[in-house]
Image 1 (spheres, helix red, strand yellow):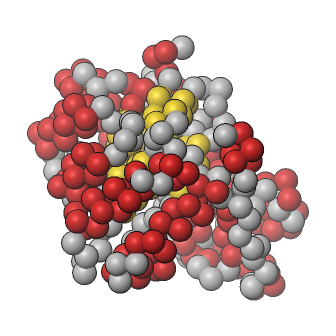
Image 2: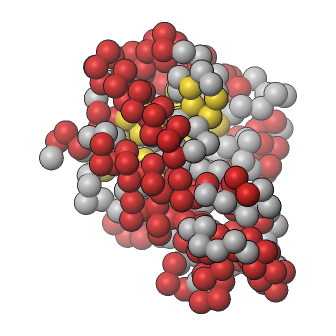
Length: 321
């Protein structure tokens, strides 16, 4: 089974096999996704920023996504400083790091800092094959895995057909031209919002599920990830609906082969605990089962506003270590 085993590590190994449970990538140490984290980094309150990282690990994150892409920040300096501080905290550094940036110089600076084997998030064909191959070769040299976005010279893949076309092309270049290990390729086939009121968006989740199944069937060794919170963007401020949407989305995506994702693991509803009526309306939207699915979910969402769950930490890792 070695050809389909993704091996990552912080101070401790993380081995992802076809039999593994879903791998949670913690999303809060990201200046674009957490206002609090962004404020702490801007104010250089790194001790408090480290607590957010620690909370993610204690909340169940198995990989830590770190992003410093913010216009008012020296992203490279902030990435280096934060990763070096993490390295000195064994209870955080025990899990692998995902270096998340749209700027190659920040990614490369991060790769020089991390212990063990991390993940780059991300590379794509956006700037053409030459840049894509150059970045992939460097990532391979550093011994990291990489997330590959479904994005090419024409733009982001926004249909099932475009998702599989770009992922296939990327995979063939990585495997045949770069010699990149298949098991170190993690595709992100783009999770887009649903229930936006725009008809073309109604199949966004279904297209992701179908593309995930296709990738896992046709691109041997490759993994599938994505930013789960994107799917519920239309319901910002309504935690009960967002939590149910994330959980139901993961339930269906995991069935099709998604094996990791960027989530806030402490804010996920348990699928079997989602109230029946809410689950039905959420799944009508995700699976595009009826024409009035968006209206029915919006209507129901008004009745559950402000009833979100509180943060729960998972301390089981302490008992295991």
